[in-house]
Image 1 (cartoon, protein in one colour):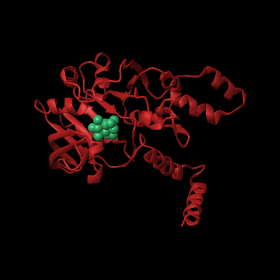
Image 2: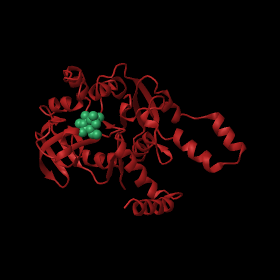
Image 3: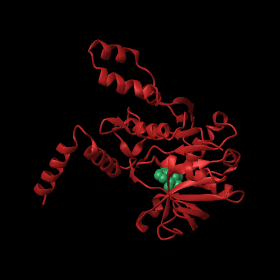
Length: 290
Ligand code: G1P
């Protein structure tokens, strides 16, 4: 079945970026000149998905505003003859149809996805986590939709990570069944150091069947009181096959201070306006810090 809808959870409090996120949602912190969530929206739109279900929370209204039309701004840009910027702001509001659902309590990723149940209905859907920015020729979620065409069940994006970092991720263990595709036998959310069953980490892109909703309704909260998506997937794996797909592309953890800077530098180096200047600056800085 075709994937037509994407769920983007954006209800987190962004505590890792305080004080920057005291008023501004972390999803709106810029990577060069675009809020990080716009990269996710662009990935969705260029993959051909038309409807996005945004899971938001209190104080997150400005995310919806960013993807809405802004008549005053547009009129101002028309008056000033800034057709170039007008095009940029109009493209943002025309990108996708956005439906937003509030997650009323911070009860974890699994619970956030569950909030989309009514709007998604009875069809497979994509999930994209805003912290994972993926720079790829073919958008990561498009690569996954192409692989998913020949399967039912669920598909999760995976990437090999250093052993020392496995405790930060959901980790899968599986058998390779095709180029880049693993059939998942085991999954564990953030295993203790030294206890991960492999170094294949789940990255924030999923294609899930609607059955996951009924399962998530029954998943017990973990010791931090959160309902984990990975626990739901473990249950789902008893009924249908789950596959891991090793995507092609560069991934940045924009939810982490260092990853956020890395993303800014990498996207900055490719930016037509500042790329060369930034390259020169980095050279200068690295020689002056030797
Ligand atoms: C979430 C998932 C985890 C996954 C990670 C990828 O964790 O629960 O399985 O590996 O995203 O970024 P979070 O980083 O939101 O705690």
